[in-house]
Length: 231
Image 1 (cartoon, one colour):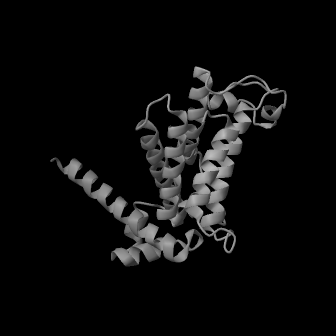
Image 2 (image 1 turned 135 degrees about the horizontal axis):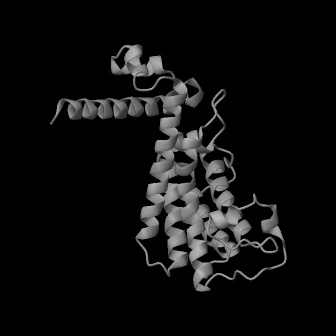
């Protein structure tokens, strides 16, 4: 391996180690308290050395956010790809279950991307594409149903889609019909699923729900039906 290749490998490994330690700090201290100096101390590095990899706390946060979105997106994509394209309900169920499994096993990363904003931090545009991966998987199942006729895309006259941002329906490959509700149903489904997860993981359903897994599984079926997926 060339000297340049060796340096690149070492840099990639140290970048990975810094991110891993930062994730443990997310779990113990929360995103708002994330400190490059504290990460450097745990790694036995000078803080100036860590700054060569992540010049600021915000850049480290951005890297962690992108990693979390990509990890969730990849898990959802793999769950979706494992099933036949015409098995819309099976795909929906598998993807939703995978999302919850990821969230409950990585709650601090879930909180980083779906929890309260970190004071003083503004996510850059680099986070937009990774953030959309899981949403596109969910919307893609509905879009496949529309293309094959399994999901009714006939305008219901509700005009719900007119409330969405211009161009959103086309962006997620759904009919751009302001008199209908297909794209709005995708938004309802997405927000309902993540709302349930947020209530579960942030303790808002304490003393309300005894079996979160069972309730989520039932909600997945009901939300899928409301979105228009065939049973």
